[in-house]
Amino acid sequence: MIEQTFVAGLLRDRVAFVTGGGTGITGGIARGMAQAGARVALVSRRMEHLEPMAKSITDAGGEALAVTADVRRPEEIETAIKQTVERFGKLDIVVNGAAGNFLCAAEELSPNGFGTVVDIDLKGTFNVCRAAFEHLKRQGGCILNISATLQLLGTPLQLHASAAKAGVDTLTRGLAVEWGRYGIRTNAIAPGPIEDTEGFARLVPAPVREKLQRRIPLNRLGRIEDIAQSSVFLCSNAASFINGAVLVVDGGHWLAANNLMGSA
Ligand code: HXC
Image 1 (cartoon, rainbow, N blue to C red):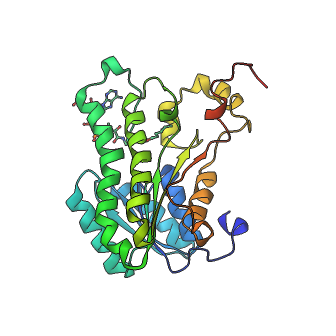
Image 2 (cartoon, rainbow, N blue to C red):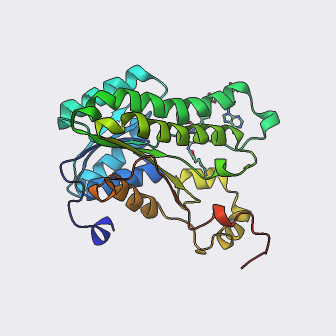
Image 3 (spheres, rainbow, N blue to C red):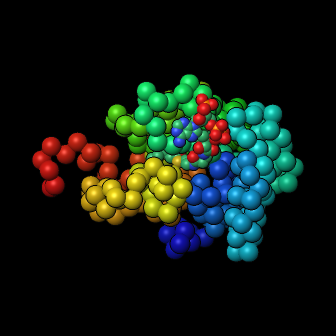
């Protein structure tokens, strides 16, 4: 649990806006931030994805607001941010976790399929950062983008998501430089294979899961909690001089991908 790792109330008085915050990795980040004392707005296209997480946060004594919006529609994001600020009074943390993905060979990928993933992952991240800027600027704050490791090598069947996440890394560095002067830190987390997520179920076929785990130097799959804890850290004062970092949280997986020596 987050409380056992960090001092209680590490994110007390912070307000976080978490896209994709109802489910999966980003849902875990929202829960982790709420456990650390933040009030959280959970944002995604479908209310049925948001309500169970909002309830679980409030049942545990936290504060959560569920807001529907599509990151591809800047006007919906502006409205969602406005609702968040009306409810909680300000905005300190933005987590860009909304993402779309599927496995598809490049030669079979339609232009709209490629564009849809870029629209959600990359342009959606920009749309949210842009809409949040004026609020973050008021008292300083931080942006946490959810990247990936697949773009670090040439991952097959993932051209669309790799291109989008490479763009997310670039946005992270560019915003760190442009908005640092306003006291806004921008960082990213690149999760490796995380079990019990929709992405893992969709992207990693069951027969290869055991082999994949053996290729991770720490010899286990990642857990949502691993990403949640790293996120709380990066958005806390403990990381107050970290800006423009892309923190890989994958047990060493991508570094071991080109293991010419076989198993160590
Ligand atoms: C090929 C596909 C496809 C597939 C959709 N498309 N699924 N092409 N193989 N399996 C194509 C469609 O044919 C269409 O192109 C275009 O993509 C848009 O599809 P729509 O269904 O109309 O779009 P939409 O309803 O907006 O859905 C977006 C989506 C969908 C990305 C396609 O999968 C989605 O909403 N996913 C959200 C949940 C999700 O994916 N979560 C996992 C994230 S994991 P045409 O040409 O036919 O019009 C993740 C981890 C990344 O992000 C890192 C991994 C390690």
